[in-house]
Image (cartoon, rainbow over all chains, first blue to last red; front, side):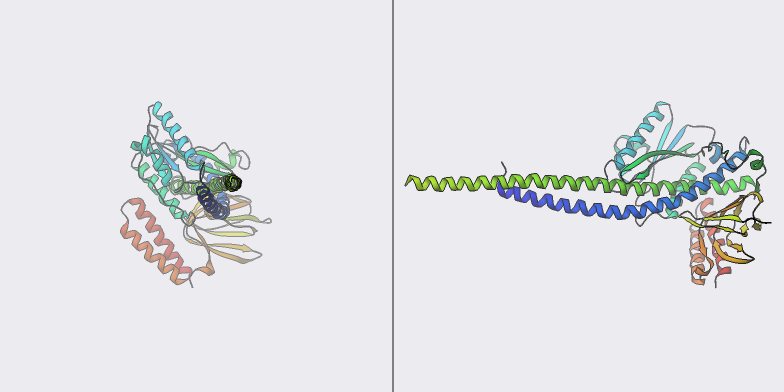
Length: 295
Length: 133
């Protein structure tokens, strides 16, 4: 049975914990709003970029000299996994679920005799896989998007990936991140970046005859050479923004739960405190009364 | 020549303009071109320069783009800009800062890719200087 003083101290400490978690929840909520609108505003660009690239890919498909970033190197020996997590914890299963997916992928690919490399974006992911997959880690990025993700950060990541690809360090590249669905749910998404996954035949607006007659200025190859690295940056940008929004959502939910748990705990402790205080008073009264009677 | 063309200007961070206009003049990589409704399908790279929106016989808006891509198809033209600024927002100081940064990047460049990127930035700065006032 803890003493009254212990109880009082514990109540005070849980109360201050609750204050912290509820403040963190508010902060996450306001950051979430900003991150969410940034993620949503960036979607049109990525979608249109994909559409344009789809048209181009269709027009050069089947050509032997097509850009390797589009059709792949012809091998699938080395697989680069770009793991997008947060720099900070206290956001529920946000980081662990990305790490879990990466572990599954790593196990699968290794079982199939492929080599993997992991490029961590975000500190938490790197720390979590350091123990078991540390040997596969390559230099990654941290502290991105301190003041909201800006495009140049995504461009930096993309340039590094492109450089590794040019040096023949990997054949296939996949990015794993949390896609934002709502404040309480995120979808783990694996998106293949290199080679560019051919989009499902677009039948809607462009019929084949029209597509074949599309003009290109300059030549297809030149446009592709500029468009592919650009697309890489755009897709990474999108992944970072989605991840950022998801992180804030996950943190908000986690902190909301923590605040509620702290509240429950305070209630329980207060009840216990009052009970033992009452017991103490009763005990003292009995002592006084029985003392008086004994006289 | 009736019918308008739907012009969309998109930057990585957001959809900037979505409007129906008579004609859009775009600084294509191999020369400026105007796109009106029923233009043949075209995909073109864009060099740093000014995109003009023409409506009702006059220029309704001028926007500086630092490069990107344009896709024209039937009733629609989509411009994917790397960066887009209203012409009136561009100042000489801005262009000068850009030039300085581009020059620094050029001297720091170690790989071909970096060098290309820096050269592109330099071209952007030059184009900005031309339109700045």
